Amino acid sequence: MIHQIQTKMGTVKLPCMEPVLVPIEKVQANNYNPNNVSSDNMRLLLQSILDNGFCFPVVTIYDDLMDKYVIIDGFHRYQIFRDYLGAKEIPVVVLQHDMKKRMAATVQFNRARGVHQVELMGDLVQALVEQGAGDEEIARHLGMDPEEVYRLKQVTGIAALFKNQTYSRSWEVQEVPDDL
Image 1 (tube, helix red, strand yellow):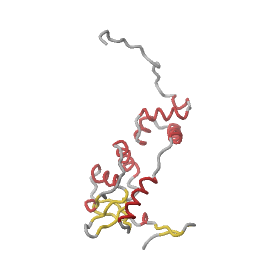
Image 2: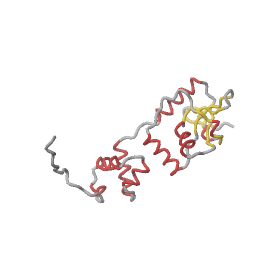
Image 3: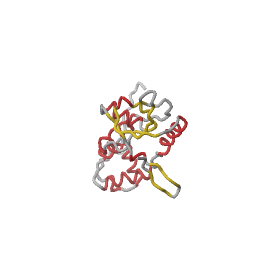
Image 4: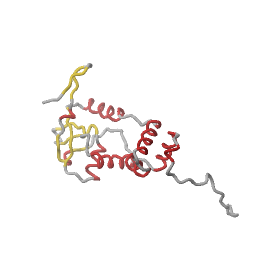
């Protein structure tokens, strides 16, 4: 049964309602994805999966000739499951797309995720501080380094966010060696 829902713009299929657990060795990358993820974001993705579970199945097509599920979206989730977690199975959804539609879908999924706005991230950091989260905890769970958390706290301009910070003098005088 294909799940779907009626919207004001017509019928929308719901493949997210039909995940299938498949052997991870039957899943493979496509050969056209232009997306690249930094090592920092890969660590964040791993942390997200550890904190929240595997919430988004890998989007695939099934290739009868290869007897493989070819990834349309979710390569990095697959990579985390395979390489970092050593999972033997992975949840996928299977679309019925030809190559043109698969390639378009890959780019759509990648580009539709958007980017984070600095002011909104600052507000989020502020809210986490108000909930009692420390800088290290915020940095680890949001995939930031402590300096980035500090800068986002500055963006909000609220002195209360810095109440537990240790301050140093704004600059220090150092001796310059004579041989320079």
